[in-house]
Image (cartoon, rainbow, N blue to C red; front, side, top):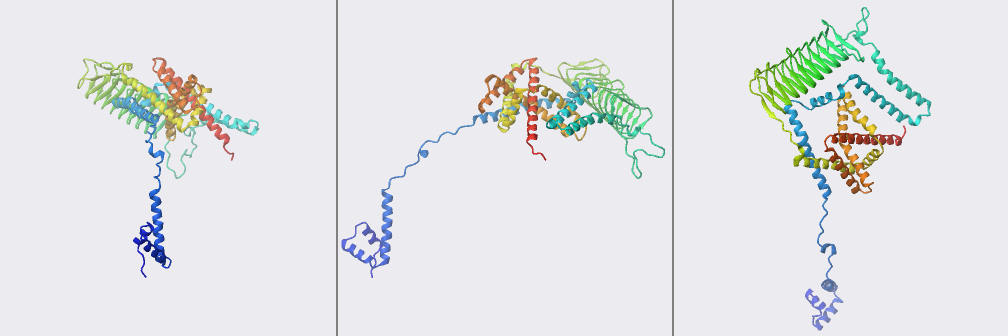
Amino acid sequence: MNHFDEMACMLYLDQQLEPERARELIHHTTTCAPCRALLRSLEAESGWLRSALTEDLETVPARLIEAPARSRTPWGWIIAFGLAASGFYTLWNGLIAPWRQQLSDAGLNGSNLLAVLVFHSAFWKGWNSMRTLIEFIALATLITVVVGFSRRNWRRRTSLAFMVVAILSSLGLPRAIAAAPQADQIPAQPGQHVGVSAGEAPVPVVDMSVKGGANYTLPTGETRHSDLILYANFARINGTVEGDVITFAQDVEIAGHVEGDVIGFARNLRITGSVDGNVRAYSQVLTISGKVAHNVTAAGEVFELEQGGNIGWSLLFGGREADLSGSIGRSLLAAADTTNMDGYLGGNAKLVGAHLAVGPHADTRGVIGFHGENPPEVSPGAKLASPVEFTAERHETPYRKSSYWLYQILFWGAAFVLGLVLLVLLPRLFDRVVRAGREAGSLIGVLVFFGTPILAIVLCVTLVGIPVGIITLLLWFVALYAAQIFVGEIIGEKLLGHATSFGGILARLALGLLIIHTIELAPYVGGWVAFLVMVWGVGAISLALFRGARSNLATAPMV
């Protein structure tokens, strides 16, 4: 049997096959299954091809035909980022870098600068007043905490009695501790060793006087075989200490012999004896007429190295006035308004200040560099290894410089960026602080403004409290800077009304910060305005945080 090929089937489907040949193909497909299947498959393919050729072209979606639209550029965030970068650069280049350079020129580091600021403040106006203030703040804090936690239980007699007993105990405990006899004041019975049990080595004695208003004297000829820590109004050491001496007192005089170091926190510290180690003094007035074998590091109001006084190695001082009539074995680094040199100096000197006077008895063996406001006054009788290298400090009116106004704009931009970040990340806290600032917060702001640094300094007295004190002080500085943001928002709302949108809040913040920064540029008034803004803002922040903590305690489940 002869089968038809694909060509014959295609001609048949296209109606181009001869009639007789077409009849044969039809008759053959009725009896031949393979040719019938071939004809059907070719017929289906031909139908698909005809439909594909005759179908209209598919329309292109309109979104593909239109020109691509330009994406919206987030100019707000770009400007904010630029202001933040510029503000950081300005802060570093305009404040931090010059301060570091000045401190490096003066030989001071950050801790010494902090000590100078502390001892130039009201801290040294009176230890008794400062102690009374600290006790008052502690008592006020205790009463506030007790009242806050017990306000729901006033009707319960047990809670009220417990609160009263706690307050009375806290008030009476320090007096009981102060009145308790010290270990070295308890007389030993015959055959009894105080503080030493059988089989134990003797424990070094640490003398500590914590009684307010008490005086301490180490008599001549008496020797302490350990470190000596003193808390007293007046302390005098005439004997020998085979260790370090650490003093917290108003007036201290060391007329004896200290084999270790002397660390003095005092209003007046006078050394007429000898110290084999170093002297680190944070005092209002430090006078040395004796001998210090190693270095002296001092910060305060006045430093006096009297004639006959001797410092074996170097002197590092930062304060208001330095009178140097004694002998310094090595180098001198000082940052003081007035420096008077009329003694021996075995090394180089680097001085920063307003005035420098070199007396006729001065004898220097190194180079003296002075960076100050006025030329140094050198006596003709002074023996100098080389002339004083003087660098004049230039004082120019900042208002005439374009960079000054650029810095002010960048400072405003930095504060605005910080406000934007707080508003985006912490909107609820931002709103709470603003609402608290509208209501009150001035008295709380005064307490927090002055109480926080005092509390941080008190915490730094102990080694355990140093990290807590440093963190507290850093948070205090952050709150002082952020205060302008919330006060600026309040001022903007007072002028433009309450805002209901995010953009409106930013507009009021920008206007308020602009007003604050403009007023702060005014002489004499600007400092007081900045102080009021910080007090107002810190009070609002403290009140908002207190209310938030109280609401969290109120909603917390009772255990």
